[in-house]
Amino acid sequence: ATGDRILVRGKTRLAFERGVPVGIDLVAHDFSSDAVRMEALRHAELALSSKAEELARFSEHFRQLHRLATTEYGCLDEVLNDYLRSGCEILRMPVGAVTALAEDRAVLRAVYPPGADPGAEASVVLTQQQTYTYPYSAGNPKQPVAGNAPFACYIGAPIYAGDELFGSLSFCSTQPGDVRRFSAHECEVLELMAKSLGRSIYEDQLRRERTRLTVELARQAQQDPLTGLANRMQFAKH
Image (cartoon, rainbow, N blue to C red; front, top):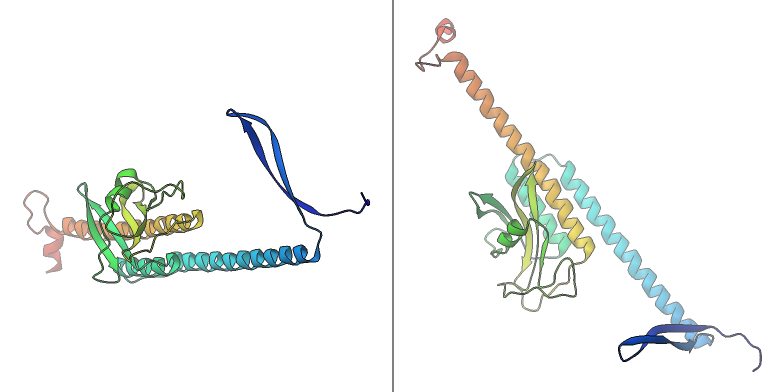
């Protein structure tokens, strides 16, 4: 031995004998040569660049979420269309849909682009009332989901308006070979979108209810509750 120091990179794994761990194997590689150092530096730069791109995407996604949550819309249809269009961009999916729950059945409320076929997997989201992905599970991206769906990949999350289940926000692709393993970040972005959309839907429901009550109170103020005929207030106007 010369007494020189060298850099090594090692990997360890359990050693088994008849199914019982009996030791630890160590595989070490010389990490001291210039070529190895340059290769390690290149890998580190690539990893750093990849992480920077990932952070930039995250930043853009949350900027989009903030815009969706703070934009003033003229009607609910504008809200749904903007969320679906933005979701298709963020998740890089060609089709987006909002499905509403009506008397225990799923009804298509909005789709982007117009005329697209979003499939029928919304029923799974509404039944499980949690985020659902296909063909790989949201909880275990390495585990394929059983079933034969009419599309290559799908991701959906439930929408709650207040405490009530309104429906689902989902995105899918029918392009052959477009198989995705949706990341935890993509699932989180979708869930945040569904939560924000649920608030907008709930606020729209409250506005409609206030308008209905205002009209009803105005009618009751001008009609006799028993006969439905005009009361003194109505006659006084004439």
